[in-house]
Length: 324
Image 1: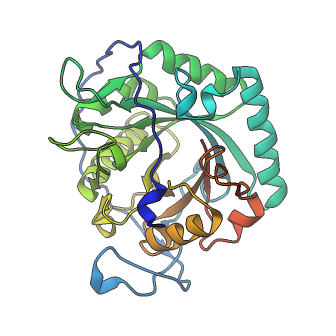
Image 2: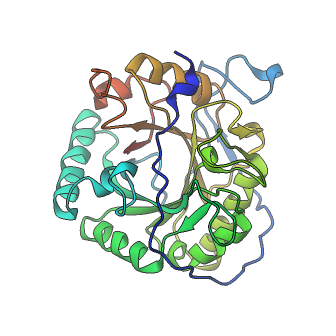
């Protein structure tokens, strides 16, 4: 079975949303940093010349208030308006949040040295199979929906991640309207290259991609917020399940104000998920790693969902866990 089979079966839905525009901020310049590298055996770089053994982890010395690596983030993913997009819509909110409590406790039990931090990961910009009025092939969640999910997160002491599926839009167009939420200390960001189509293609018709320059644009914006608003460091999750969907990952800048997680976002049997993690995440170190588990797609062929202990056997150990 080809590794492309790990692609998410995303439901393209027409959300009942309105556009809320935020203030356009200028992109700040890259700050100086002090990298802290600990060497460990496994794989590196994004170029063929560096397709050998990498060093893990690669991260700056954590600033006060950093979530990683002291805690492991355990997130429930989706959009409340579609049951096909993830766990956020599969159960009533109270039941879903109680389930998150139980899953978070399971991860803390499996690795008590790294307590689990609950989170909700909302798809705030949803890729669409139809162009829409502005022909951008994406639909924006309105502020009322974001506030509702933020309220759920607050009720459990959880973080909120806002995920962007660009369609044919750009980060320059989508990030400013999320700034009022990202200014909150417990709100973080996710980018999904699979549905970033550039100026051509239809989401779901092919796998999209982002470049390191796009990721660096998001890092710069978040780092600027941390400094200007005196916030604790932000977390940026970037999904990946093929090599080409994240180009030049060795050029992603490391900044202690933004903790970058490359999340293995593919579904399939456990052996395939492990191999995809090895090929497309562990081989190309950026900073921290994540691993996604699909309640439906990982088990539809009769396989069991991977347990925390099975995931913790991976190298490097993922510090961001996402359930869809």
